[in-house]
Image (cartoon, rainbow, N blue to C red; front, top):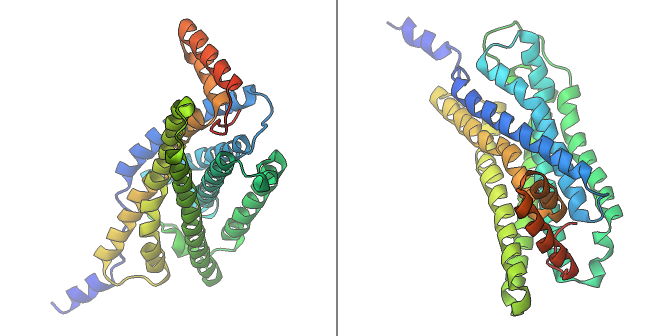
Length: 332
């Protein structure tokens, strides 16, 4: 009898053996998201050269979505348990990192979209240079450079050589340096998320405050439309990214210093996977954001997929909007 508890206590804690249910959701998100992203790519390519910062930030957001589209099939195959050993290693080293590159580049670009909306609405001449396309392109390069600088070492640091087994946790193949860098990267990314969240929520709050102060009846329709855009952007950000980051800190610490209680490890893992599913959902929700935030994108979609009469009516309405353009106008 004394040997049984010893065996059970020394048995490995398996936490990632029931992932099939998640894969169905990932598969559905991938199908909807890749269709939406391809339509978005076609619409952006069809329009004229980006003339405003908002276009540039949204195009970079779309680029991040395509990175996620490339990586998601690998995660689906691995989670289904049908991946060969080499593919499991490749997923841990490369495609899992691509998913996080998508996540944090998306978070940062959404923050810049919010700031751009506030600056455009404020009409302050001091910020005129910040609204030039050249500034947006420079910031896009800086953002990608920063995110890649954080994530690429996770791909490049050598890994342990371990015996193949049915279930693999990515932390198991990391050497000490790789594990330390992984933990450091996670906490830096959480800090990025917290700073961008303050930036995004503050910008959107100031936009809403300014709009509610506007008593000009002639632009009330534009005010209501912009308020709707702010709500959509904020809702997508909160739904996709806040729950995951609430769970990520305790989960990361459990990887670095494993919790002795297997049930706690399993609970943390499933909480992380459930909230991660919401994060990946941004692949489906971003095309909605493009549609509402970018007039030229919306015009191209309605022109192509709308009815003939509806398209003509919509085109006439948008031409009138263009002639009466205000600071509430979105990208063109």
